Length: 272
Image (cartoon, rainbow, N blue to C red; front, side, top):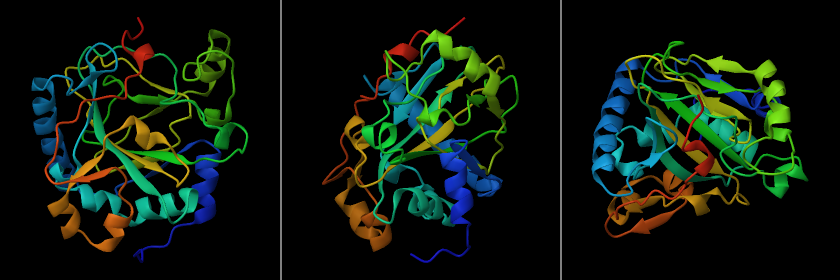
């Protein structure tokens, strides 16, 4: 696929190998984001009615994995020139989309502990290479009281003993000193290494803060094992070769209910 814009590969790789977080401001029109928000609200309501349809990531905080084709703007996201440029720069031309979902921190969501979304693989710990990325799109303008996402830049390379996803208390001061809150606005899209230590903060507002999640792996990434990405045969066949070629997961005759399996037990309680 030819991108319509040129992006600096060195800046992309420098940001993700350095801070572990980069963003493209105003990537989508606000009207498009409003449509994304409406789709997420509908799918969230459906998921909460389905047993196992929504995972708790702490009090009043949920994660839902979805079927990509039920999101009207899905193809817009995965073919956005910045998204494709970032994926190709960091993961190579044969990257695969392995996760499509969203997080919803509702009013009263508590601060999470510092964590990673999964354990650091040998390719990163030993090979010092990133083989997965996470993209996020907020559906609202985030304010300080809405529990913004907080990240400790440069910590995707940290190694510690014990729980591979939750750093020990003696490292917390390091993360507090580095912490940056991301006040994203409608239309922004970000990319990060999910190994960069981060947390959701307490939502003290009366508004939810839904955020779309796209997970992408290099050919040797294994995060697809945690998810059940599905597209129907009819939808798959209707897409251009570029889209089909980057989809991981399964092609099924008819979509099957998704039982949420990416549980992170250490996030269920939250923090005071």
